[in-house]
Image (tube, rainbow, N blue to C red; front, top):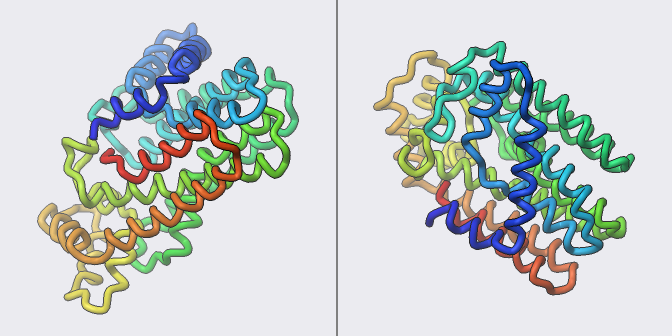
Length: 329
C-alpha cells in the first residue's frame, strides 16, 4: 500500500485546509538567523503523514467548524510533533530519519536541541492567539505528558522484563496523548459538548495506541526499503516493544531470553544475533498477539466515534482507523 497516495485520497476533502496549515507552519518556522533557518527548512523538507493536522480539522468539522482557530491549533500540534522528533533523534543518536540525514547529524546536537526548543516557543504564540483557556491547559498538559513518556522510554530502555502494562503506559504518554489532544482540541474549538469532547479524546487516544503498536510490529516485519530503517532497529536501540514482550512470555523460548538480554546489555550489536531475534519474534506469537491488541484499540476508537451521527467527516475519521491498522510504514 502506498501510504502517501492512500492518505491523499482520504484527505482529499480537506486538502485546501491542509495546504494552508503547511503554509502557516513554514511562515512561523522561518527564522532570521541563517543557521537556525537552514536547519528548520531541512526538518520541514521531510513531511510526515499530517495525521495530526487532519485529526484536528476533522474533529472540528463534527460540530461548529472554526477554521481560523483550528488552523493555529493544527500548526501548533504539528510543531510540537516535529520538535519531539528532533529531540528523539538526539536521544537516540540517530543519523537518519525516513532515509534523510537528521538535524543533529548535519548541525550537531546543540543546534538540534535549540531548533526543537525554537519550535516549542513558537507554539506558545500560536496557542495564545487562540484565546481559549481550555486549549491553554490541554496544550500544556500534552507537552508535559509527552516529556514524561519520553523519560519513561529512556528509563525502561534495555529491560527484557518490561511488562505489557508498562509498555502501554509508555506509548499512551509518548505517542497516543498527542494524537488524542488533536482530536480533543478540535472538539473544544468546535463548541462540542463535554461528552462529545470526551468521545473524541477517547477516539484519538485509542487510535494513537493502535498506531504505535502497528509501528512496533512493522519494526519486526518490514525491511528498510519499506519503513526507512532496518528491521530490528528498536532492538538495536535497547527498546523492548510489544511483539518482543509477548514473544518473551512464550513457554518455549529456546534460550532467547538470555540472547535478548545480552543484546540489550551490549553496546556493540551483532547483526546476526539481532536478525535471529527478529526472525524468532516474527515467526512466533508475538506479532499476532500484538496485532490483536492493535485491533482491540482500533475497535475502541470506532466505538467512541460512532457516538456521532453519520456524516462524510465521520466517514473519513472511520477510514483513518482502517488506514492505521493496515499501513505498511
